[in-house]
Image 1 (cartoon, rainbow, N blue to C red):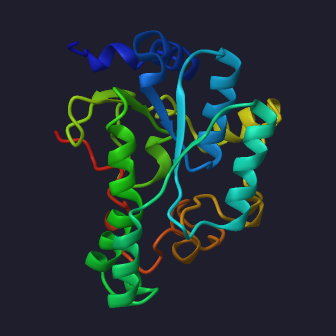
Image 2 (image 1 turned 180 degrees about the horizontal axis):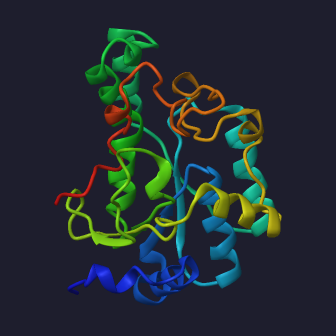
Length: 233
């Protein structure tokens, strides 16, 4: 299928999710870290009541509050969450050779940790799919300003990548959560707008960028773990 990506820019998130269900069924999967955007999409998916896979990557270093939210999602929506873990041997070797906090020593070390704990499990998950859905938004940071709503994923061909909330603002996300009584991670109320692994996430200060709490010791242009690379121009 040849995509005309501009044709999708006028579609609402619900329309894009329905299109994903109709086009790919359970071969379309939402990659969820259970952030606010992902919770909006999970609520929409539950209401659309169509075939679609929801999966998550358990790095082994998530916050306890994130695991609690996962169970709330299961009980509230009755949805199956497929969980992918990193390769045990690779994690053991990394920690034995470099310790528990090697990711703070250099960008390369941090990307190595992200690759083992996140990218490789993601690749296994995507190997079972034809399309993946994300909660990426253009206003989340300098690495995401130009993401389209639908694109052919050059990093995982022939996968289609779908970003239903690409044009949404933070205010729109919050309004949807309030109006639809969507459960969220309690850490959001403690000034964690973006939540990843516990050692790599901190609260943000007033006026800081919403991703300032992720890998705060790095420059903004480096703040991706390898799951989402910037689209080529």
